[in-house]
Length: 120
Image 1 (cartoon, rainbow, N blue to C red):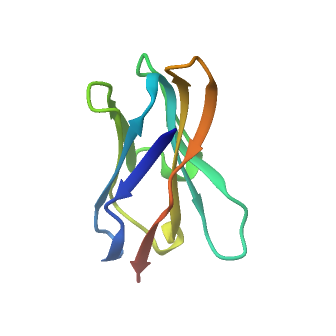
Image 2 (cartoon, rainbow, N blue to C red):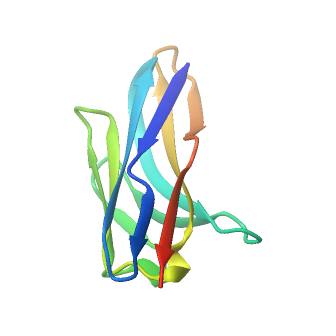
């Protein structure tokens, strides 16, 4: 079993910053890609940012130059630094990790979600 615990969401004014964290624990042999998704009410879940094990990153266009994804492999943790936040960034943010377990199963694991609310 692999669990993810997210933290860092909240309510901030437009132009502000937040930092999300997501820590993985459990029967982990190796964490492969780690990413952040978001889902606003009435919308589909969308990829926000992704980081591979070797540090390559990918961002959706709307967050480029504002958000930064990073990971600490020693802590099995992924971060999302969000700056210059806009009301349209309001959503529930979900962490996702692709894990190889200690029994060599390949799993896609999701966090419980953390709410980010940006006021105008």
